[in-house]
Every structure is written in structure tokens, then in C-alpha cells.
Length: 120
Image (cartoon, rainbow, N blue to C red; front, side, top):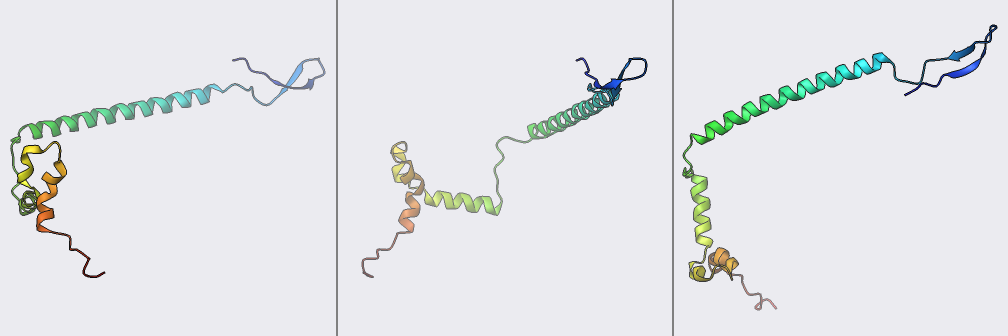
């Protein structure tokens, strides 16, 4: 890119007098920008390497665990019991057509909605 000087006038010898700097970006700014981008790239590469190593360690520790581990805490057992009580096993032959009744039918049977006809 060619710089365009700002012309003020002529001196005694007829030479054009310029004011200020050229409109191009100076070499120092380019050098500073390149240094900044280099440091930023280096930091990004280091971050990616560290994250990849941490991810590899995490994967290796999970491979050692048994895939069939069952949660046997009180909370897990309570949640499983609640879910099993909510299932209506009578619908098990036709799950695809009425999954809602299969999953929630047992809960609906044990928690009937009261009729409000008496109050009217």
C-alpha cells in the first residue's frame, strides 16, 4: 500500500513540505502485532496440549471402572423404587402404542384424582 503524504506547501528551494507521518502503519506497530499474535498462538497451543493430556487421563481412569456398576446408595434405591411403583406392568404388551400409561399408570392408580362433583 502506497502512502499519501499530506502536502502543506513548498519551501524556499521548491521542495514539497510534508506534515505528520505517512498514512501506512509503521514497522513498530506491525512488529508489536506479530509479537502479540505469536504469544497468543503459543498460549493457545499450550492450553490445547494441557487439556488433551487431562482428557486422556480422565478417559484412562474411567476405562478401569466396571461398566456394570450399579448405584446402591439410599437415594438411588429410593428413586428406583418410586419409578417401579409408577409403572403399570399390565400394559407391557403394548408399550409402543401407550407408553404414557405404562410409565405413569401405576402412579395414577395409587393417586386417584378426587371428583369435585360433591362440591358443586
